[in-house]
Image 1 (tube, rainbow, N blue to C red):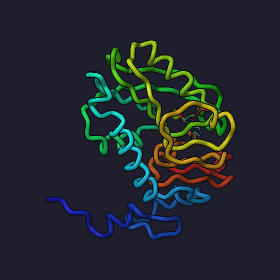
Image 2: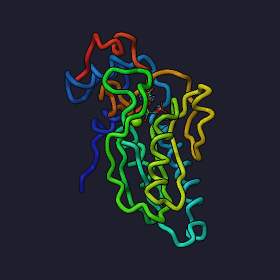
Image 3: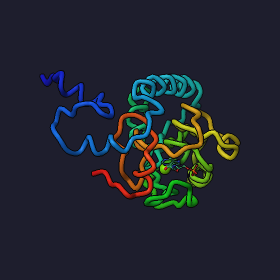
Image 4: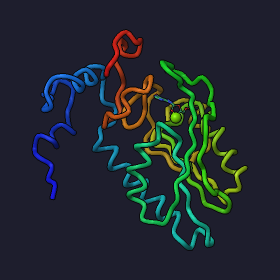
Length: 218
Ligand code: IMP
Ligand code: MG
């Protein structure tokens, strides 16, 4: 049986300035780009369990009229949120994928949601729950939800881990929200800047030098 050593668990909890037990290299560079930790991985984990509890209760068999559940994470940002959430939802489900890009490359403001691809499977008659990492302008959900409805879903609900505190986001209909956060650019826990930082366990803001692209993590 594999056991996590003390040094392995410590590495999962690394903070800026902490000693990297794997030696010099990748982690310190990535952690040096962090301005501040907005939401710690402990708080994320607690919130994910709460959301999963609500979703499970709302998708009990008597509420589905015999229909089945399909979870649709919006790639790539919702990947980690989805992986954690669904392992706390003990009901039969299928997974479909939608890929949308609204912050291409080094963007820190939405450039408009672009549907890049989908692998939805059979949505017809399913109770679909669309998952996204963050709700900002509402353009992504505004593109995905009608596409899922058009594919024949019986019902479509939406869930975002984060919602930015700006009028357009607060006015976008959404069924489940984890955290309302300030209108700032954030990364970590699946969210990226130029496709980096998705593997940070916490949700963080970046130092201006990192955003300007003058410094690149590896
Ligand atoms: P919306 O379409 O403007 O609502 O933005 C939602 C999408 O934009 C999310 O799926 C994210 O991929 C991306 N996004 C929005 N805000 C941020 C951010 O602060 N950091 C990283 N990605 C973001
Ligand atoms: Mg996205």
